[in-house]
Structure formats: structure tokens, C-alpha cells
Length: 231
Image (tube, rainbow, N blue to C red; front, side):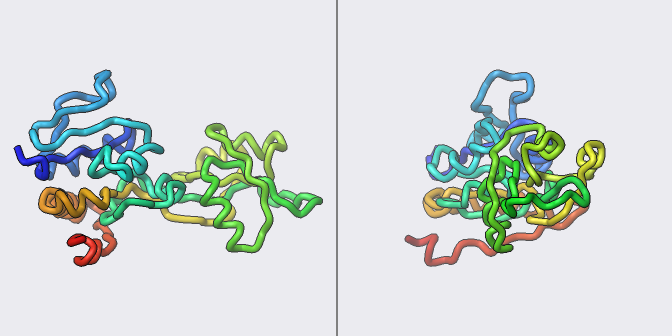
């Protein structure tokens, strides 16, 4: 088998994996093991040219950036934090959709110091958002139970992902500012785009077709310029 025909795709367990499976199946790629029950971290598929690596969602862009995977599926929230170095982002898969929001207690008084404290795991996104508004903030990095932070006085506001808003409402919080619409994106290693262009674009075309046939049509970003693929 020509090594330029083989592809490694980085995926994370859970919601993104489950929603990516039908798209991969349309492209003729089905894992031979279930990552929820298997201890394997590298999964073979019924397409002998394609294997899947199962990693943490936050690690997907790093594996793709450094060439440990040719492609990956990652949420836009993860990509915003990563920065996108070494990656192309050619396709919005329109799955795992939600919003990145600023949220807090309704009508809460502003801090007397004038410096807001923001609890979030999305540090870079929060910094960019508040810097663009000209606000000085102190970022407190948390990994879970974000809604608790304003309730116990740890922070004034939070930046987190919001889908239905029910968790915020149950904890007495409300969404206050929209930062970004989030969905899962296909990302491609820049070297793989050049060296495995035929295999990558064939998969990209199949996934684009699968997404276009889903209830919500895909939006895609332009493919890398032709001169970049020849370098």
C-alpha cells in the first residue's frame, strides 16, 4: 500500500465521535471496534487505508499539527484555544453545535475595583473577547462546574459553552454576551495536505457530500490556495 494513500484521523470519545460516525460511514469508513467499550487507542476500520486514533478532545489539534494524525475532528472552541497553527480547517461538519457565551447572575453589581474576574477553561477566547471590548479582566482557569464560580464569589462572570441554557437557568445564571458559534470542524495537517493530497481531498469531498445531505447544510471555508499545495 502506498503510504501516501493511508490516513490517520484523530477523534475524541463521546458526542463528537458518535455524530462523526455517520459522516465517516458515508465516506466508507467504519471502525471495527467501539471506543466506548474497547481499550484500544488506535482503531482499525473496514477501509484498510484509514485508521482512527482516540484521544482527548483538547489534544486533537496538537496531534494533527505535529503530524501524528493527518486529519482530525475538533470543536471550534478547542481550535480557538489552540490557535490553529499548522492546520487547515476546510470543512464545518455542523455537528455538536452550541454557543460560547459570557454568563452570570442577572443584574449583579459590578465589582468595586472595576476589574472583572472571569472563570473559564477558554482562557484565550475570554482574553480576546474582553480585550476587544477594552475591559481589564482577571482570568481564573477552571475545568468543571463553571456555573458554581459566580454563586460562591469566585468570579463575577463565566465564559462557557451553552447549548439549551437549562444548566445556566437551573443555577440562577443567564447568558449575557455571545462570543462565538461553535460546531465541530475537520482539520488537516498542512504537510499531509501536500503529501497526501489525493487521499485527503477524496475524504474531504465525501464528508462535504455527507454534510450537505444532512438536515443542516454545511458551510465550508475555502481550500488552501493552490500554490501552497505545491510547496
